[in-house]
Amino acid sequence: MRCSIQRSLNRRATNSSNNIIMKIGKYQFENKAEALGKIESLGIFIDEEGNKFATHSHSIVKLGNIVLEKGEYNEAGDEIKSPVFSEKYHLDVMWDLKDTVDENGGIVKADHPDGWKQKAIEIQDEGVHSFFGIKYQENKFL
Image (cartoon, rainbow, N blue to C red):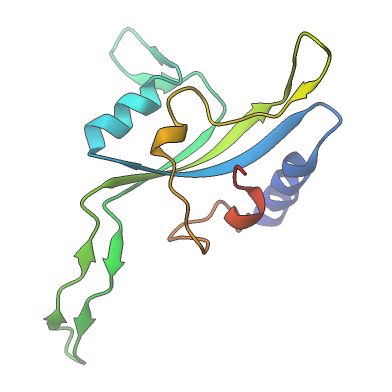
């Protein structure tokens, strides 16, 4: 099943016939509350019991305070050196976006949704997380 999901995502990332594109963004927030507020701004439905459901089709992974430096441990599993965690809260998002057409008929490439670009971070590798092996470096916003 994972292979079929992978093929579907790869087709989605390159499907130009309907202008749907998939882009991956990596984001950093001051704290979890700020990140969750930004997620909710994408659209949620709250049912009669107070449960929240996304009304968008983006895939969001809450990474939290990621490890910046790995800890060190001896053979018995005792900690020799503590890991160092980021003080910021991190999210990875696989955006399901569409290019648009301007008033002159020109294509406007999809970009980060409103308010997300200033929280985007640029990394030189693939990071601590990936979406089914989809490469961040090949699918990031330019």
